[in-house]
Amino acid sequence: MTATDRGVLILYNDPAPPAGEGPSRWEESEAGVLDEALAVAEALAGLGIPSRRAGIRRLADLPGALAGGPEQIVFNLVETLPAGARDANAVPAVCRALGRACTGNETVSMDKWLTKAALSAHGVPTPVGVVVPVGAKPADLPPDRLIVKPIRADGSEGIDAASVVPGPGPELQRAIRRVHRDFDQPALVEQFIAGREINVSLIQRGGSLRVLPLAEIDFSAFGPDRPRIVDYAAKWREESFEFRNTPRKIPASLPAKVAAEIRRHARDAWHAVACQDYARVDCRVDAQGRAYVIEVNANPDISPDAGFRAALSAGKIPFDQFVLAMLRNAEARLGASPATGLAEPPTVSPAGDGQTEIRWSMQTDRQAVLDLLAGTGVFRPGELDIAREVLDDALRAGPAGHYQSYTAELDGRAVGWVCFGPTPCTEGTFDMYWLAVDIRCQKRGIGRALMLRAEDQIVRRGGRLVVVETSGRADYEPTRHFYLRLGYHEASRVADFYAPGDDKVTYTKRLA
Figure 1 (tube, rainbow, N blue to C red):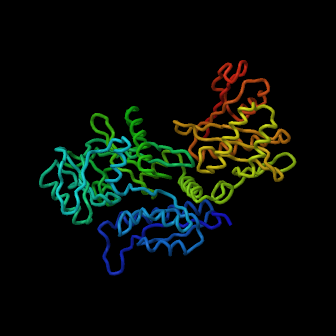
Figure 2 (figure 1 turned 90 degrees about the horizontal axis):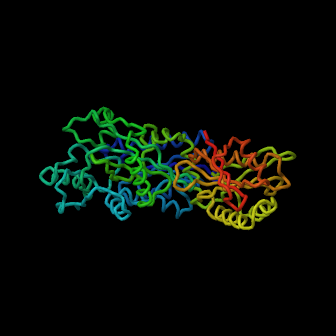
Figure 3 (figure 1 turned 120 degrees about the vertical axis):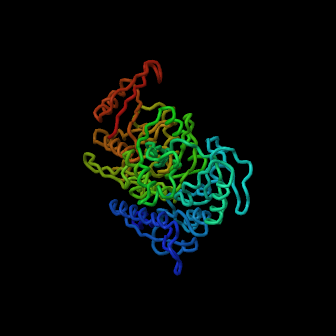
């Protein structure tokens, strides 16, 4: 039985109040997780993957929720638990200890102070701030405009116009006392960056991290007496002025230099907080065009109306393909065989007198792939050494690695191999590293089937451009014509690159 057959458990924090208690003052944000769970369930149903939904109120409820079904993969939507951020952050670890794998993050980002410390340690600009423990008074504050937040709360809970104060003084003291009273946790007091607010959504698909189109919150309807922030009302209270007057502009209209700096800060923040799968980084840009990271949301809202979904749409990534990519990531962490489970199911293509199955490469393919590479007679010994290293790396890392490796199997033996991966320091560009077909099985459409499968997988990973490099030697002429027939175009030629008389020819293809 594969992980797909076992289905997926959609896990979320149950927003229903305990028996005998009235509704929470943050009931809108807490209930939002139900929309997320429903959206994931609908996506899985469309993909033909069975699912089950389970809500928990305490970390102690988790083992029972896991035991309620056979699922090995958990789509984790737990945002908060009454006992605090530590319990919510522990959900993936408990799942892992019980033999399950989770989508999403296992980071400290719900603790705003720890997040700021990690950002500062990695050189990511973030506003100056201090923590004020319950019952204490702030010290060493900058004389600037300030904003006061609960140190461990999600969804802008506890943030409104009164959270922004002109500086040290009675208003600041009231804002701090309110956080202490309402949340029984320390308050974070930090410099308020007046200016534009930019949301940056990021996703990891296999070994590739992609920054989605930047989004800006439009505060143009706000008067001078209203702080330009996305507070609780703006996110959750549909009848409020703030909700109705904070539209999202995507893609954001920014100077190229500022946009590039924001994308760089977002990537650096991702790595600083050790994110995985998906996250949202919120930035503020001051009047001088300097960008500051104000928050890393490692479990952003993915419901249909959320900013993350808007970024997926702007990036031309269907929601069901995002869900599937997160499941693949989780399965790779589970350690499942890359040829089974939620990895791509094998495809079958005609191959002359038989049918070729194209699937994830397995360790048992290793020698056959190396033999067919050598048998083509076109690769030099040094090239074969590099191919062996790439294949070994791909087999070792599986679907989560940089090298994505597929094998064509005919009548029970490996007869073709393709390997590709994202091009470093690019967005959406992929290199086609290796393609080879057993010399005894050529001219049967196997190479074409491998290339089409690779291109399909590149599109699923957000790819837009494929780059192929090959030799200009006469014995490579059939290879060059093969790429041209598949819609590739010669982009460049470097004379004598590989050896005297052996040019490097580069082909590219843009993918829909």
